Amino acid sequence: MNTSKNSFLTRKPTTHLLLPFIVITAGFLSIGLQMLTLTPQVKQRINNYPNSNVRILADQGILIIRVVPNSPAARIGLRPGDVIRTINNQPVTISEGVQQILEKNGLNNSLQIQVLRNGQNLVFTVKPELLPSPNNIQP
Image 1 (tube, rainbow, N blue to C red):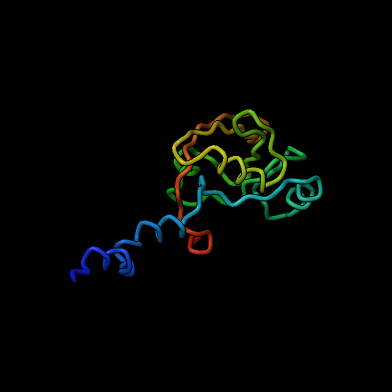
Image 2 (image 1 turned 90 degrees about the vertical axis):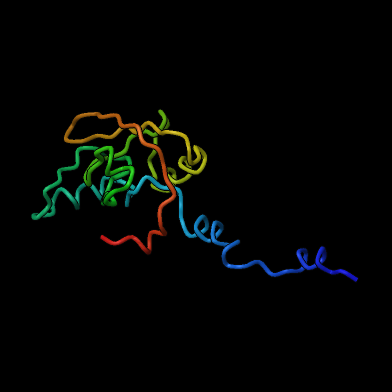
């Protein structure tokens, strides 16, 4: 009896076959930001910090703390201290909302991000990418 047809069905997958799945599950949809929900208390603490070179004017939004080098956010010019006000014309007031919008938007669709920087409203267009796990990103 020839079992070669059945051996394919019972054969364990090899690392080579699993590699694309490992890459996808190890990444997350992102534009490359570390961010914080901005509250009046956070604003006050940052503005009162003597060594801060950032002055926050907004009372709410999403404060960009860090931009990952070579990320989509870095390539379009987002900076620490920028405050995200809207994404695709949807107001964002909690950092978790940003990730929800990214996931809903998907990988191949651009996002329009409005930020407040030094009192000026700026609009950027960015396309999210699969980036390494945040625990693997070096400062």
